Length: 200
Image (cartoon, rainbow, N blue to C red; front, side):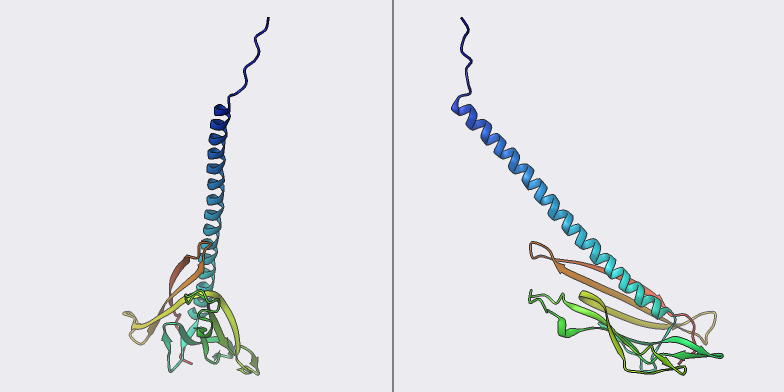
């Protein structure tokens, strides 16, 4: 005579169910946190890339520029002229170019922090007969700007006393809110030394 196979008791089923629920919960938390961490890292990388790209664009323009005679460089504001062509041996200089934050957009999404500034460029680059003409054109260089600072200095070179060297320290901080409504920001800084040019 065969003995009947014994099944699981109710207590064994309950214990197995609790262990399975704990394991599934742990797996769900790990997957959810991993996705959130990936999204935060992706946002941070995007912020860094955008900050580097906008500073490199400004630096390229500044390297061959001249400060305007009434030079202005202050937190959130930069003004200069750049070489836009040649007329024989003479350099054609642009009208004043300004790069500044747009304070009217300081908190456009009403999240309580000034993370919605735009970095804008205003310039007249159009040439007619070798002369910069036309209305100034404003373009957005970058969004999500928390701060843009400019520090200007000039000094005499030791080898050539007649040459002044113009140097800019540029710093930009971009910020966004993460999924938990915490501020995520990155700051990038660069130094630009202007090439030797004739004054405009």
